[in-house]
Length: 145
Image (cartoon, rainbow, N blue to C red; front, side, top):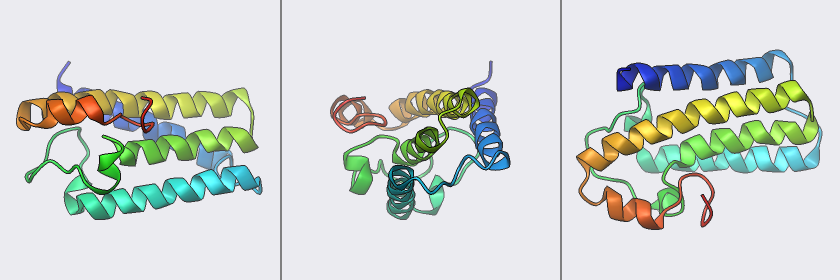
């Protein structure tokens, strides 16, 4: 399968999961733990977008022109934008511990994980220093994974 098509499919799966959570009103809650995690997730996403800049907006998992970003949240995570979306969606499970909420969070995580792997393949081919960077920077959970 073409890597761009696979990337779009991964993105589509994540969007479907998010739409499901929105349609069912499983995104926002009054649960304080969920609210804290989701606010932190939004902060991480905004911080990541500001550090990465406008070039972070693209539909397919491919590299963009410019240098490899390893500052800000990218010091701790290779994929902080995806991590923020994953954290945000999994926080919904705390407030709405349902099989369908778990399934949606898995769909979102799976779709974004596909994109991470495809992006890493592209980044490895584009940036000579990506291999070293990926050895000491985790994908989505600092110091763990």
